[in-house]
Length: 496
Image 1 (cartoon, rainbow, N blue to C red):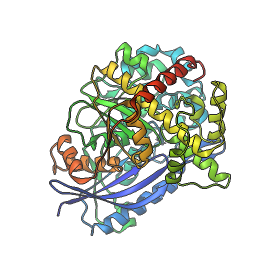
Image 2: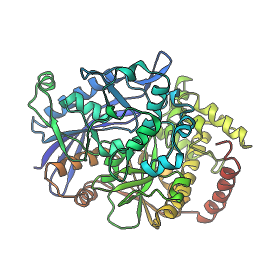
Image 3: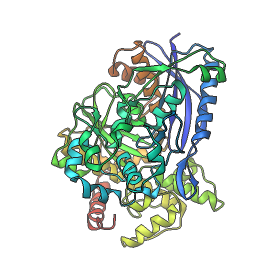
C-alpha cells in the first residue's frame, strides 16, 4: 500500500501539514491541517508569530500521525528562504524571527557595497541582490549593534529551525542555505570571503547538509506531547522552491519552471552556477537544487500584489475570494496599463492599491479604483514580466525554452495561466498545485531509499496529478503590447 511521509510546508501566506503515501508509481496527498501565516507587528518591527506557527505545526503532525495509523516513515519541513532564528548558548530562541519585509534592511545594499565589491559578492555567492537576503539582515544587525546578535551562538533558517525544535539537531540544509547570499556556490559551503569582507560572524553558521539526509527523529519531548512513537526527520529540499522544482513533471529537455505563489520564481535547472557578466547584469540568482543541480532563476514579486490588494479591500469592508477577483479581472479591460511588479515600494505590506496608483501616476499612466481592473493590471503585468525574464534566462543560460511548467498555488488562477501562455508565446503546462509538499515527500522517499532519483520522482508526479495545458492566443496583439511594456520599463527604470 506504499509508505507514509509527512510534509510541513510553510508559506508566507499560509502553512499546511500534508500526509503523503508513496508507492512505486503513485503519490497520494492528503491535506491534514492548514493555517494562516503572515507577519505581525511587534514594537514597530515585522516578525513571524513563531509560537503560534510551531503550535499549529505540532497539532498538524499529531493529526497526520493519527491519520496514518501511526505508520509514518519520515517527516520534513520546508519554508520560504532568507529568514532565520537565532539561538543562544542554551539553544533557546533569542527573539521572534524577523520577517524579510521589515524595513531594517533599507539601505543595507549600499552599506555592503562600501565594504565589499558588488561584483565580487556575486562571483562568490551567485545570488541576486535583494535587500531581503539574509546577508543584509545580518549586516543590519551588526551595524546597529543588535543585542540579539550579541547573545546569539547559532543561526538557523526557518525550516531548519522548526526541524531543530522537533528533533534537536542544528544544521543548515543546502538548498535553503544557498538563498542567503552567504554561501560559496562552487563549494556549497559558507563563504569565508563574504563573512570576512562584510565583518559578519561565520561562527554562527551550522554544518551544511544535503537534501534527503536523515537528521534525526522526533524528540522524546515531542513524542510525549503528541502521544506518538519516534518518527524519522529528514532534510528535504528545505527551501520551498527547491522542493517544488523537484516535483516539476518535466521529461523534455528544453523546459523552464515557474513556481507561482506569493513570489514567482522563474528559471531553469543547470549543472553548475552561472556567474557570468550577463547573469550579473540581468540579476539572476543561483540557488541549490535537489540532486546536485543549480536553480538558475529570477525572483519576481508574484501574487503578493493581488494578495495585498485583497487584504486592503477586506479591511475596507469588501471581502473578495480569489475566484471572484479572477472573474472580475477577466471582465476588465486588457492592457489597461503595466506595472514593474518588482518596484521597491511594493515590497512592504499595506495600502497596496494606493501604491499601485502612485506608480501608475508617476509613470504617466491612468489610475484606477476599479477592483477588477486593478486585478487585471497585476495579472497582465506579471505575464509580461514572465516573458521578459524567459528571454533573459535564455540569453544568460544559452538554453532555448520551449515549454514553461508552472507549479504551486498560482495555477488555480486559470486566467493568469492563459495570460502567461499568451504573453510568452509558448506552451504552458500547469500542475501540481501542491508541488512543494509533493517534492518534500518525494525527497524524503529518496532519502529513505524507496525511490532512486529526481527523475523517478518526476515520473511519479506525472502519474499522480492532472496536468493542464495552455496554448498561446492572440500572438500579434501580445507582441505589440509587449513592445509598449518594454518601452515603459526601460523609460522608467529610474522610477522602478
